[in-house]
Image (cartoon, rainbow, N blue to C red; front, top):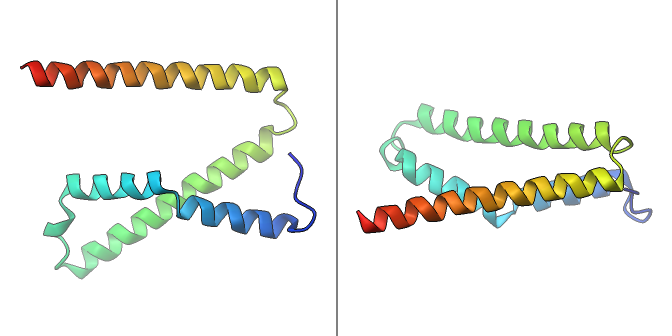
Length: 111
C-alpha cells in the first residue's frame, strides 16, 4: 500500500482513525453490549462510569494499535496469493458463523 502523497502519513493516519471512531457497526456493537450489561444500573455511580469509559477507550486503542502493528509488520510479507487465501478464510468463517446464528435463531423460534 502506498501513502497518499497529498495527505502524507499523518493525514492518512488521522483519516483512518476518524473512520474507525465513526464506524456505525462499532457504535451499534457498543450500544448492544452496554444494553446487555445493563449500563443504566451503574449510571449513578461516577467511578463505574469513568472505569467503563476508560475501559472502552483503552480497549479500542489497543485494538486499533494491534491492527496498525499487524498491517505494518506483514505488509511486505503477504503476497496477492496470501491476501486471496486470507479473504477466502475470512469469508468461510463469516458463512460458518452466519449459519450457526441462523440455526440457533430458528431453533429459538421453534422451541
